[in-house]
Each structure stands twice: as C-alpha cells, then as structure tokens.
Image 1 (cartoon, rainbow, N blue to C red):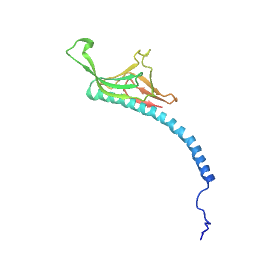
Image 2: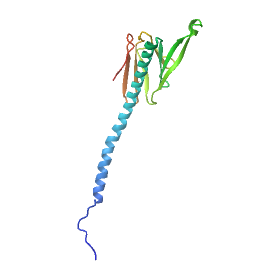
Image 3: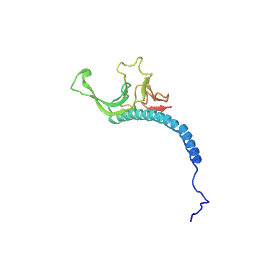
Image 4: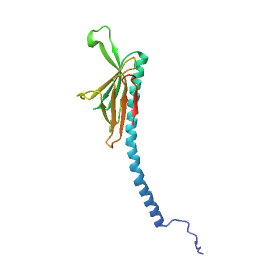
Length: 167
C-alpha cells in the first residue's frame, strides 16, 4: 500500500535561491549605510562629551568660586578638567597647582582641532580653556571630525563661558 501525496507543501530550490538573493541584495545596501552612520554617531558622541566637560568646568568654577581649566590634548584625544588651586604659602607662579577632576578619552578615529584660539598651535598639542568664577571664559572654537568627513563644531562664548554644539 502506497499513498500518493497530491499536495506538496514545501518550497522548491529555485524559490529558496530567489529569496536568498533578495536578502543578500538588501543587506548589501543596508549594512554599509548602518556602519557609515555609526562613524557619524561616534563624532556626535565625542562632541557631546566635550561640550559636557566644558559646561561641567564652567559650573564648577561658578559653584566653587575656583577657576577651572579644560585641556584639550589633540595628540592623545583627551579632554581633561582640572581645578586650579593656589597655595598661599608659596611665592610667585610656584603657588599654582592643578588638581585633576575629570578625564574624557575620545575615540581613536576622532580628530580634535582648535580654531580661533591661538595664533599657532602649541608644540605639545594641548589647548587650554580657562573658566573663571564669574562664569566667563576664553573664546574659542573646537572642531571634531573623522576620516569619513563627519564634522561637529563647538563654540565657546567668552562673556558667558557657555559652550554650544553647532552641526
């Protein structure tokens, strides 16, 4: 006794190949766009972290009535917030010391530049923004970018010390 199967419910090999080709073409279009947007997200995140550090230094300066310094190391892609302490017992410049408050490392693919700040870039690649207890700061513009051409600009107002992100 053999039974005949009249209704085959499976897929043919040709139908499976067509579906695999469609999935392959779709992923060939979507995946590069996803990774391209990932690199731009990395620049955006680095810019937001930098703005956050600048705002943090300004707020600490006002709140503690102590000047704070934000150092941008372009070679190491490091943003450092430091408190400026003055030792009254020591004379001259030797009475100033820095106390590290916060370090922020930017991604390896991030290029950090400072515009409108110094006439010439320092040899060590470290730019500094000083925030005073009044809230004021030195004016400047910071540019973060990557090799894909994604760019973020940060502007620091000298009167208010306010740092804002401009795309």
